[in-house]
Image 1: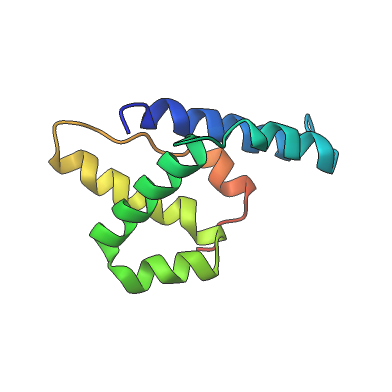
Image 2: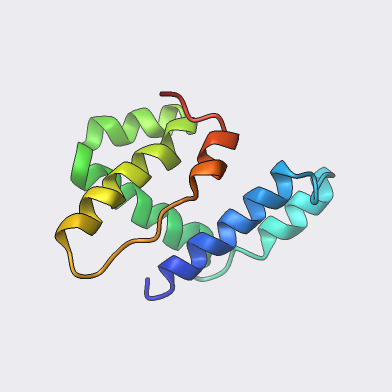
Length: 107
């Protein structure tokens, strides 16, 4: 978890590569994503921290809503992280607003 901020940026870069069609074929997307797996790769650390942060701020019901509509996940995490950052000495990285918008987060 000590690399969470870096892991979030790494995953964000991969999302951007898909959105901008830098990675356009299913095989290229799979190959890039496979680099995130491992004992505790970025998929795990980022996903776990996002889930814990959302649940801690908004409750389990909201986390479940995010799991059933993944478009909500990044936006709700950003809101929870912003609240966390206002009240804690350490801060959590957040997803860039343009990425959240590009992924179509519902309002």
